[in-house]
Length: 268
Image (tube, rainbow, N blue to C red; front, side):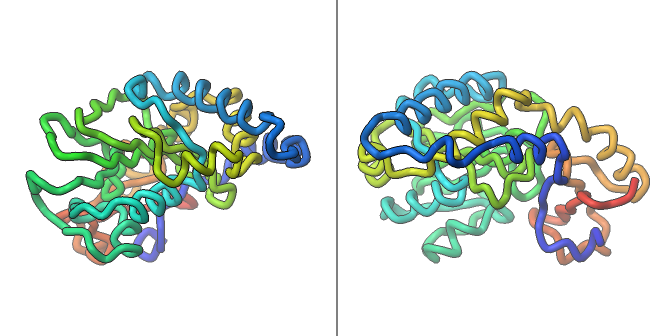
């Protein structure tokens, strides 16, 4: 199972499932223009800024938008940014899949826009991004699946993306946020006419009001360690990921000789 996992994903949490059953989508059945949706959005953004501040400080990012996970934020970035860009080998492939014009680099090119995930998609580990002067698109999708550890945002970061899929298993609910320093050229006009997913506000607010940002990591970290000990694996900073340099997992290598393994569903 470790060798043949097609993707990485968190377990399904009964506590999260129970909360989802209590959420009424009809509560966000709003008439557009009465500012109820915009009010919900404002409260969710304020709550989220505070919820993640022990990991990342978003005070320099004045604008924020609901997206269908970090993936939709990437879609809008690639639609609107024509500059040359780069990504590190092993990082999330979606930006390259949809645009086919990024440069996969082992080392940082000093000129091009850098798309980078932190914690890193390749390993689930936090990485240091200090002293980077490039324009940066920062994908923080794995926050909610890690312990609290401070991320230093590179000074020229333009966008910071978040997802609720990873830590809480909300893959199909497609809940996310993206923060920007300037009005986003496609998302800002949509916000102004209240054209975004209203039920996402309800789901994200419910999650944040009931769980801390590191709660699922703390709940599962001992299980992660037990599984890693049993199968001779290395724990990732992300609770449902393990790493290995064993050639047995060669096809799952994402960065150098490190294979990224999903431990969800593995017996400890």
